[in-house]
Image (cartoon, rainbow, N blue to C red; front, side, top):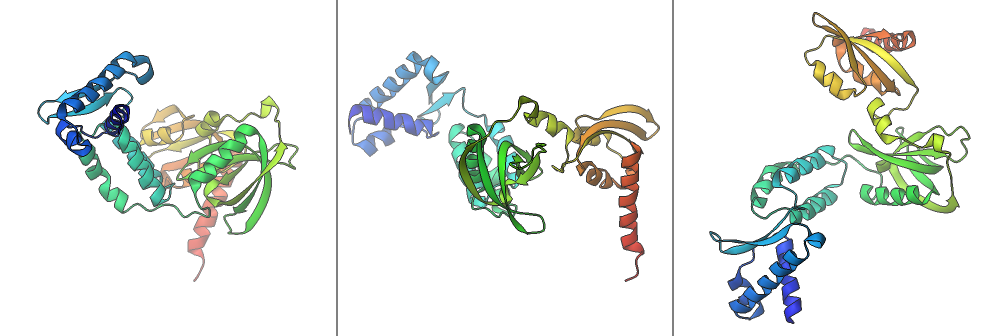
Amino acid sequence: MEKTDRTLAIFYRALKGEKITSARIAAEYNISTKSVSRYIEDIRNFLAENRELVGNSELIYNRSEKCYTLQMDDFLKDSELLAVVKILIGTRAFSKPDLLRIISKMKHFVSAKDRQLLEELISKEKYHYTEVKSDCDSVIDNLWRIAGNIKSRNEITITYYKMSREKVTHRIRPVSIMFSEYYFYLIAYKVEDENLNPIYFRVDRISDIIEHRTKFDIDRKYDFDEGELRKKILLMFPGKCRKIRFEFSGPSLQAILDKLPTANVIEINGNKALIEAEIYGTGIMMFLLSQGSWVKVISPDEFVQEYKEEISKIQKLYLEKN
């Protein structure tokens, strides 16, 4: 192995978070420790001379452990990695093999110092991880194919399993991808829909994708604003946009405000808070019903009526004789 190859090999090992010791490297490559020191010095000089390329990176010698480790500003902090991994596990959106592979790769971009501690903090959750059921071979692969067609503006035909488990096909124009409540969603327009009403498809229910050469172009007024939608929609149930008011008397008003980014407290009277929010879709009904008697819907009248009808249906289930 040539000197340059050895230098690159040592640098790559440091980049993966390995602790570099002169004695071990010398034994593996059958060279002297002085040669290893020269290779390490070459790496340190390269990092110092190319800060614009590699960022603020240094190969630091740890006297207590008698080894070199690579420190980079672009490394994730151990605390940052823990937070991101916990979120990934909590989504349950990926297959277990995909999740474990992603976590393994991410761990290469943090310092080796606390890697064992991080593994201990997530080991039980990794072991008990249960993914959401999927109709596709890989959610990740589906996402990437869809993203490519969004960028290239290609029409696609998807084979899709509805909630009823009916298998259907749709030729669509994909425009956006969002994540909400365990699932990735494809937002698209049906090719035959001249009114361009957006429809949502769960990516994990797409069992097949056919890419067409046909391009599409959509007027700017129909550009999709994922950020605006995320503020106003719950559970990705479509529907019209309307402003609602309801009273909340539960123990955690902040939890309601966190769930509804557009919510504002109009007034507080004793343990009751009057809340107003601009909401898109019908998912708000499911959420407010989950709060039980802590919620009383105030307006608009049509929403109050819908809410009453849903409560009546629930009550009827328990009044019917078995």
